[in-house]
Amino acid sequence: MNDLHPDLAQVVVSTEQIQSRVKELADQISADFTNGENLYLVGILKGAFMFLADLTRHLKVSHTVDFMALSSYGKTTSSGAVRILMDLREPIENEHLIIVEDIVDSGQTLDYLHRVLKGRNPASLHSCVLVRKQRDNLDVPIDYLGFEIPDVWVVGYGLDFADKHRTLPYIAELKRD
Image (cartoon, rainbow, N blue to C red):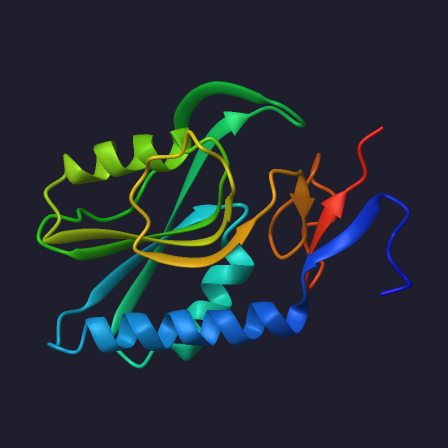
């Protein structure tokens, strides 16, 4: 793409690759939950909103959508401490949960969320992550993974830098000076 914003170095995952993989993930989830149980999808705001919307449009099984907002980042850096900014509206006991997350970077947020939601006694708990950075120190459960990406700062398709570039239809590497 020659018309990249000057803040961007290169496209890491194209629009076409994202749309194809999201459909594959939805097909895989639909095949795994064919026993009539209702899925409870928990989208993690703000980053997962585009991914969750596209994913749910392709699901062929009954599902409910809710959201949580967590924070481990300031505008541009991670603080390391995860906190819940917005919680689920309904109890999740005996529900089949899938956490839908945009990115696993350090793994701290997903690990924290897994522990918190497991304590609420869901029938099952899974995770669906759009991108995971290639790092040696990540040891968090990911049941459905879109893409492994290099360990660079990425934006687009929900991912941002200081609330910029979130609505790009692709994922791109941010130039770092």
